[in-house]
Length: 136
Image (cartoon, rainbow, N blue to C red; front, top):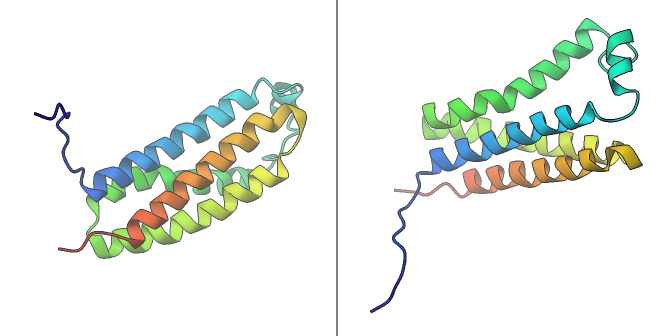
């Protein structure tokens, strides 16, 4: 008589959606915690920051919107398009967040480096899971 806990198989689409939601939470935490970095708030108020033009702000918004949309699209889309989008956006965001992490090495942004590497690990897991999408 084995005393095992009951479990059930979670659909790949729900797994992907949960992974994208995790990435989004890490993005949000990183941006929130960055407000505690000295001079950050002053830079936001006086325009002395990385996103100091409308076009840079739009670019950042588009990049962050990708992962937000993937939470929903991973559940909605058919497997073929789901696979294409998850692999392409997953690879892009893995490389992008690795670049952000590497370029953020400083004492006050070490938290940002850690979050960037976690985001890259999760987006890599997304690509791996989609690449190995279960067959019927």
